[in-house]
Image 1 (cartoon, helix red, strand yellow):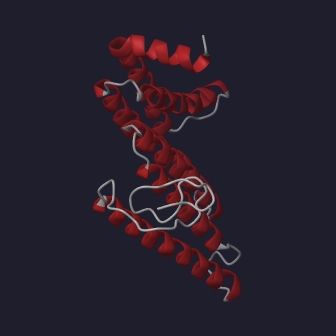
Image 2: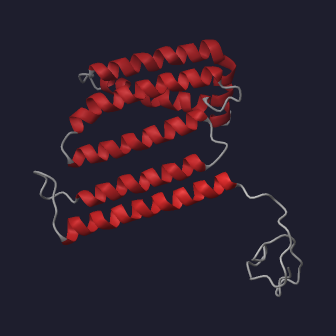
Image 3: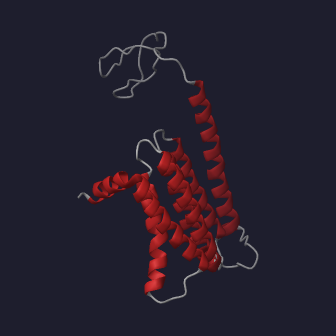
Length: 221
């Protein structure tokens, strides 16, 4: 195959020039690399699900804004915007998980933090902020902390430590702020504060060098 613009010969059975993406001319040869059927199947499934997501967003916006469909007592709430927010963010998370090379802690921590932010926004509009802040957020952080600690202890490459330290930071700060401000600290946040502190001490004892190296690398010291 020959590119009429780049004036180069291209082997294999490509249809477009790898340099300028112009259509190649000539007779294709045998393929150089085998076709990965698994990747092709995943690509088709991903296209199908992204089509479903976009369709759901369009239908939701249509029902909400054009037909005035409302959810229960929330007459002024444009629920389709919340639906679109959730679906778009979840789609980004799906794309992120398809990228190879991401560690287990990254695949665990980032989606959890993303979902918590979405839940806080959603609970604000549905007037259930107390439930999210008092129970869902701290207990989810505790579960993520424990999971990240286990991953950090068995991780051979040291990539889990930054997510473990970040999770501890997020778990400790709210409790400290409540204590300093002399406000009543929720029982669940007390648990989160204690678990964060205990796991930090355990990380220093069992992975002290990795903790120090991670802090030095992130703070450039």
